[in-house]
Length: 147
Length: 302
Image 1: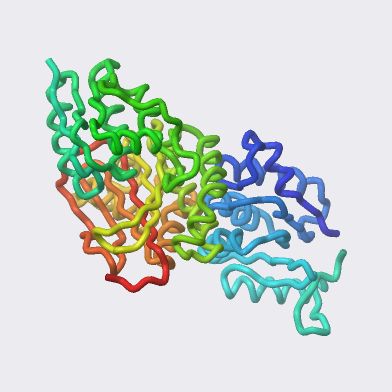
Image 2: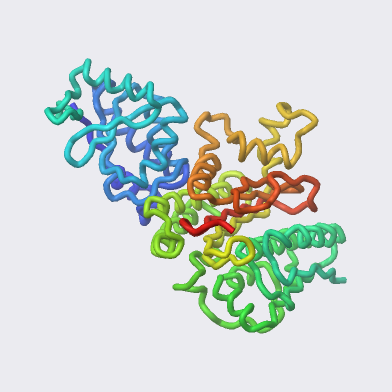
């Protein structure tokens, strides 16, 4: 099962809802709490969670740490980030690498890329394949096997 | 009695220590202060936000009585200070003498972000939102920054402002401007200036870091811990990302950061600049003042 989380919707519920940017730690904490509440309703703690950043403007390092890094640190979840722009990656990638963590990015065409610390990224991909959550496509890339 | 503090004619980060020295001496007198800017010829965003910090400190030291400020007499200077949003913020802090034009802060000009108060998280959101709307085109077309870099610029600005909200214990100000920097580079730059009159880096980090540094502990060691070692007063391992992220961004785009707090100043100095990496024993000044400079890309260095 894939749990889908709309980050922009979470941001709209925060006190900063008139803005589209994921900036400041309090905003990050609010959005993480929103995601954790959603994940708490999922029975399988090892399920795949697709976190959609579509509609989000800027993400700063503090927010990337509060949301992505802390979610990965606190839960043994597989995070698939979608709707990610190059600007978003500027914040998320160094934060993950700094913590020795990894996440997946799902491109518009469904292909997966790993993001973060090299060792953790390789281990994440191996785990996904072993659990048959992802498979190699005919084009040589990887994609989720679940819808 | 009133004690005079002269605002340097060319008021920027280079003349700031002279201003801070005069300020520190005057604040000790316990008298009402008069900041005299009538002969000001030019002020950088760093000078403008620094003057507001001085006003806030003088007001606090004077038991709430507002210090005096004589406005610049030169028409162009007065007009620029007004367009830069300085007087809008100064009106609360100073009893202003001199004719201040009733002009709105700049909507479209090299003033990418007028002097803006930062007191809470919502202010940081507003700053980031405004700068993306106003600065993206200038950063890409005039500074030749990759469009990717404009997002990084907003991130750096956000992190610099968050330092006020998270650590200063009081409000502060931010201003962003683009200009042609003849003195150093002969090319355009974008300058971010952030300043507060809060507790400063040493006080903020003292509970967790002073033992580690032992006798070396002071303003300079605190700045070194924060900017170079990425240390934060919070024990959470994810903390300290903000300044580290700003550093990474500036290394990529050949930029500069300098932070002054208390009696010290630290800088990450790019090849085009001749600033010193660390200065200690400067005149004491309240809070922290951050200067970030991003130069136009692709030009040859002087």
